[in-house]
Length: 83
Image 1 (cartoon, rainbow, N blue to C red):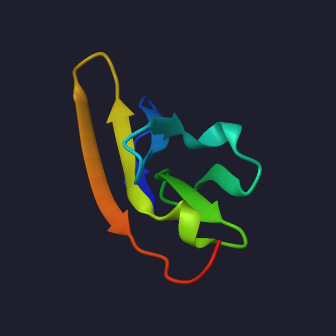
Image 2 (image 1 turned 45 degrees about the vertical axis):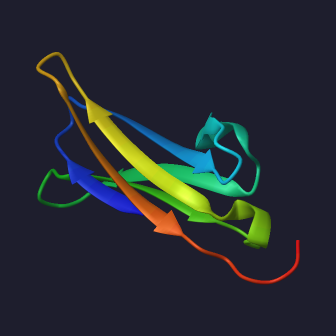
């Protein structure tokens, strides 16, 4: 999942696990949350999952917020198999 935004916005990536619990992804070693600035001064924030497992399935979300308000996008990720 990735999002494009201006520099004055704080980004949070999280997951609602199939069990219903929500977690911020920066606390999990197999989840890499990063960002970079393009030549057009646009910030791209992203999350990558290394060695995805069936237990990683759930609804992933990205929330962008600043002093004016917030915006959020969520998408379901299904991973089939064992583990």
